[in-house]
Image 1: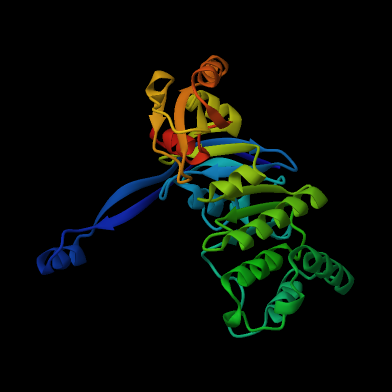
Image 2: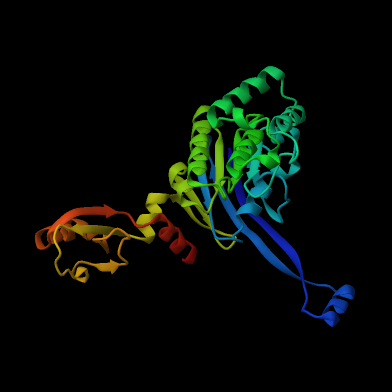
Length: 322
């Protein structure tokens, strides 16, 4: 569905020193520097895939999504989405994709979301029967009924994001570009949006490219991730594979049944204690887990023991630094 080949975007950014004289010089002779937002990015996405697109702020994620949705022209490189070149912005392409940005508002602020939906129906020239059928399906998935008649400015952030998603999906796009769709939402609202995206993907087979700084979004939805930084693809593969490659260790957490002196450094690298009283954790190599847990059970009065992978946030942060 999506093929990207050496996509590059370079901006010319004006710069000057502070002060009146510098401002005056800049008026007559402006200086620019080149900023490479995206450099030689290549990847492909198959029908039905949900792919996480990760990177720190300024890594090039949003610039890439804007090029793939046709909002920006690249400096060089090629991309094909559903057989279209995105920046040509042909009507057939715009009918088949959507871009939802958590920090941008596509709904009219002073009218109910239902009226904005009708505007989208007119823009996409959706037959009434298709529009009503899709709206009913989205209502079932997102529970839109109680909020459709409220002015958008009166909606909570979670309610507005549900309406934003629905507005972007009324024309049943085959490709979704989602830029921070759960930003600022509480835990309950985040979970509902994730459940909705998973169900929409299962029902329609749409391909989804998702950026998010919430790792819960990524682990819940994406079997595959792309890591970009700075402007280049640094990793393309599964989360589990990345964890094995970058952080080949496990965390063993124990709770003792009786107080006793315990030096966990004999077993591995102690890490800061869990907030729960009485729990202690140690980091060990994945290959040594079986032997070390056997030793700990023999040496210590253990009441509870858990073995976990390292936090995905730590793994992703390490990937950014490599």
